[in-house]
Length: 367
Image (cartoon, rainbow, N blue to C red):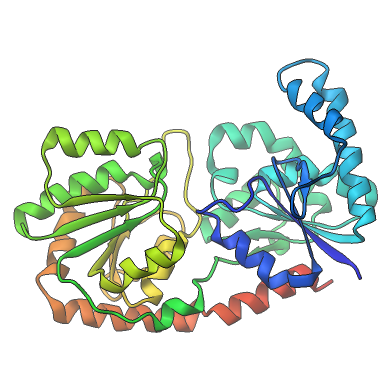
C-alpha cells in the first residue's frame, strides 16, 4: 500500500493540534516523520539513520563538514521513503518542505508544502529559504495556504496561484456542541506568548476594560518567551483580575471555553515580519458560540465578522479593543446574538467535515 509521509519538526507539540488532526485523517496511509526540518525519526521513535551517524551529524551543526554529512542524512531519508512505499510527502511548514524537497525530486515523489504563518511572513526565514521555496514550488503537487494574505505572499514569491489550495484549519466538531454555562465577565486568551500574539497589548487593553467594567476577569492560557515579561507587566502595573494558566491540555481549554463570555486576542505583525495564519483558537471560540474581539490581522477578519460575530480593531488599537469588550460585557443580549451568528458562520463556512474532505482531496487527488 502506498503511503503518505507526513513530516513535522516537532513530535506532539501542544500547540500543533492540526498536525495530530492530519495524522488522524490520513490513518493507515500515514508514515509520520519528525525531529527537525530534515527529520531524524519515523513512527514511534525509530531513527532513519544509524544512531552513531545521527549523533555525529548533529554534533556538526556549526561546522563546515556538516554539509557533507547533511547529504548522508538526505540519502537515509530517501531510503526510508522507499522502504515505507511513500508516494506523497506532506510537509508541515514551508521550512520543512524546503529541507526535504530535493529528496522528493530525486525520487520523483510529489511534495505538498503546508504553510502556516511564520514560514512565509518572517523576513529572515523567507530570505533564508527563498531560493529553496521557488525550486520547491516548481515540483510541488499542491501548496497549502491557510489564509488569503498568505496566498498572496506565496504568489509574490513565485508560486503559481493555480497550485495553491486555501485551506484554513477547521475547529474540531466537538466545539460546535460544547455545553455553555457562561460566567459573566470572563475573558479568555489561548495561544503562545509570542510577539505576533501581542499578549502584552491584550493586558494593557484589559487594564482599560477594568476602568469601565471593574468586575471583568482575564484568563490567559499558554506559554512562550513573553510569558515572564507579561507576568512582570501585570505585577508592575498592579493589574487585578488576571490569571495565568500556563499551557493546558485541550480538554482543559474546552472546559474554560464553556464558561467564557468573550474570547480576546490582539494579534499583530511582529517586528521581524512574523504573522499568524488563521488562528485555530479564534475558530474554536466562534464554533463554540463565543463572541470574539480581535484584530485586523492575517486570516482573523475572514473568521470574525465585525459587528455581527464579534469585533475587529486595528493592530495596536488597545483603546478600541477595550471599548468593544466593554460593550459586549454590559450586554448579554448582544453577546447571545453574536454567539448565534458566530456558530452559524462557522457551520456554513468552516464545517469540519468539509475541511476533512478538502484536505484528503488535496493530498490524494491527482488533478
